[in-house]
Image (tube, rainbow, N blue to C red):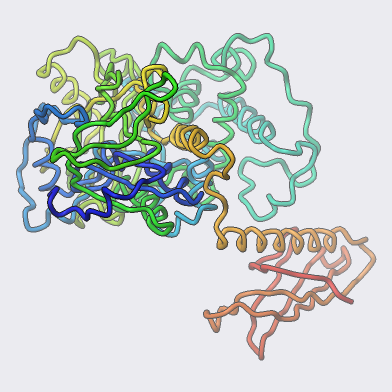
Length: 602
């Protein structure tokens, strides 16, 4: 492999060398490339994603059974699989490529910093997402006549349809209403932008909000939930483990109140943003996210090399400080760079340690966990399975996501590895979890394994121009909530005066279009508030989409009238482009259809 590498890669001095194609370092590669830096992005694997890879079935079986690499090279990946159990009733060999198995399955919260970055940077155009269809919890001793696996009530409709008691419904609605108010920029009236969004957890239009309570007298979030909002124990479990996705039982009593409320607000406002579920997951596996940022880097002249034969960092002393001047290869060559960004799995020689590991189970089954629910999130709270003090996260995916063949479902179980258990005891624990979660009938393919998580290194142990990408090691981090901040921190150290993944031209155009939408909605709201005895006609010039043409956006004239109260305050609109109906208004307080720009004349 080394003989096939272009000599130009060795002779060029790059601004940044990135080692590993995991999500954090791939975001960094895209950001520094976008800032005009020259980037060489390397990976010793023959696939993208590193510790966030998504592998087809045969590829996964080869990877999981491969022993740890034995090498004298200091720049060697320490990320390896410890296979505990593997069974298969079917080999799926002709359809191996129909599978995409995540080493670490993840989801994205619709209202999150990562989704914001995907949208405004333009990276999102390289991805396709599917929404989860429901969030569920498992309870060994369910309350309120719920079955052991029951759906978490997230919206107003869900709450009233649930089997909660009347008192619990009242307390939960009060809490959800508070959260909706808590995050609003202006809590006195309904913001105009909410005219087109779901009102499931919003105040009625223009209703005044009460002053938000102070929680200074409460020590933690659990006190707020139990003492102020009077949430039952079961509802507290929902908030802590299904909404906040807390990992450890020992952590929940120390949750900071403001940060926790911000996270709950992000969850609530994710509902209905793109789909009824707050969670999105990329088609074809989580490695698609890393690959998409790599594509953006390549667009801005990033250079990529897989199966790179890396051996060590080359260092020198400069002003009494260690600095890295490049990355060496096993044949004695050197890639030259001013900065090196590396996945933590390559940095064990720099003091990075692994004090935790993930315990994983992947199952191919022929029926879903819940009837007629193809994609779901299931949370098992700490203590529900063999007194395990750590939450278990279950993700079920179907063939529409491109991760398994039609007629099958892929189920992922993920938790932190319980301490002081032998490999046999870990398998026994996972089988106990399977009994409660998996549908009836044995899986047709099963694997149970562990992979290491890496701790953040001490900054004083690193050369001054080496940056290690790592996520929290003692957390499941199922929604990748920390990856953007981790990437931004590294980017700022390299490019302190540059913008982090600035908006793409496409995103700026879309934002301008949304501003025009808001103007039109404001105008419509003004029309609705006309005095009851007045009839007024307006002409609006609107740039909109012709459904009959389905091919272009054009400007057209819209006649809109506001009628007296005796006519139920009807707002009507009729628009025609070359004789084609394009936009029709509706009764009530909202204008139907979508108009993407507007101005009132007449």
